[in-house]
Amino acid sequence: MKLAERLFKTTEELWKSYLEHPFVKGIADGSLDIDRFRFFMIQDYRYLLEYSRVFAFGILKSHREDIMRRFAVMVRETLDGEMAIHKKYMARLGITPDEVKNSKTALLNQSYTSYMLDVAFKGDELDILVAVLSCAWSYQYIGQTLAKIPGAIENETFGEWIEGYCSEEYVANTEDIIGLVNELGEGISEERAAYLEEVFKNCGRYEYGFWDMSYNKEM
Image 1 (cartoon, helix red, strand yellow):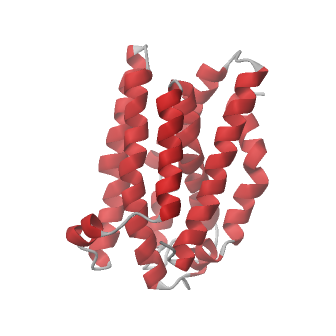
Image 2 (cartoon, helix red, strand yellow):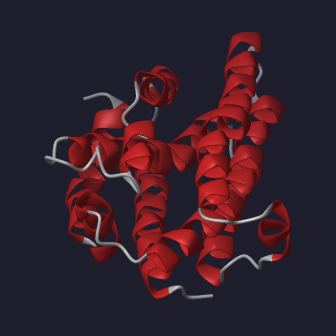
Image 3 (tube, helix red, strand yellow):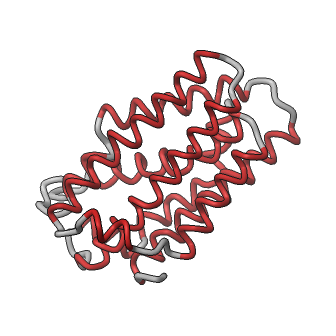
């Protein structure tokens, strides 16, 4: 079994629970309160800034030029790709750059990104990839699942968000991370694999907490 498949199996039931969360269900059927989504967008934007720093650690920690370049692409795709979706939504929701800049980062958000940065600081490129994979892959999982629900992707408020996370470009970026995880994870020790499972599960738990935090607008 490849490492990415092993990681997925450790969190498969947790990921299924994301789909039952009222925040995600509200996106799916269009019933989510716009203030909750507005809160989420601001916090997620602040999250992505730190997420990009985690990728940047990959450039620092890598010893192969090709992997350094791939981490550099991941930084660019996050800052110029995924965050572009957020900027469109924030403009539509009347969220100004000053509002984002002056907003505080919620405690769970800070804890999540600090955990990933700690993993990146202490570990190597494989540790970093596993830490970021939970977010990237679970959003693809959610996007692809919600896109199959009749009318979800056509919703004028949330449809573009769903579409962004099941787009060919986003899926390709996630598959690139998965491919690197499998490549670098080949032949690792059972002890190392168990540690990476722990990192992946912890990040998955943070992801569920992020949905909770956003639904409750909890600072």
